[in-house]
Image (cartoon, rainbow, N blue to C red; front, side, top):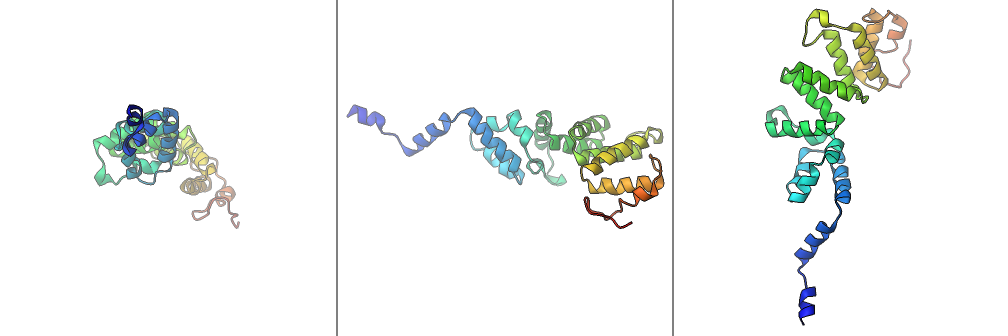
Length: 206
């Protein structure tokens, strides 16, 4: 009788024991998939508040590095220190979208030009098209400095790279630069191949 009593377990306890028996590597793999496909912050946060183990593993650098941009996409009125910290953790983990987003926020909203540009550069070095284009605009305008800080050639180079990666605004801007000889040798014919409304990959009538 005593053996039978020891074998008897409640459904809740069995469920808990089963989850606890899962190796961390497997749970991390699942959380990485979840964070990379999340369509809103609540998709990810709801998992973090489930239990201590999921909260701990959910904040693992591997999981944060895979988080989609929608995981930390909130309206300006809902911005808070805790979200800023979470975004920084994602950026520190190597999340390229987080680097770009936090970089833009620091550069334009918090007026921290150096840190913001550095984060955007980190994203740009990983072929992040919006980051490349944003840095191009900064170079064109001399943002955060004086008119003497403008570097038109660098702006064109960054813009060209972003355009190559399919960024529509960069493609349009590159066309203007070529037509006007802005930061690059003037080439009207080539510039007209990049009109404002031209989708990438479609032929353009000369």
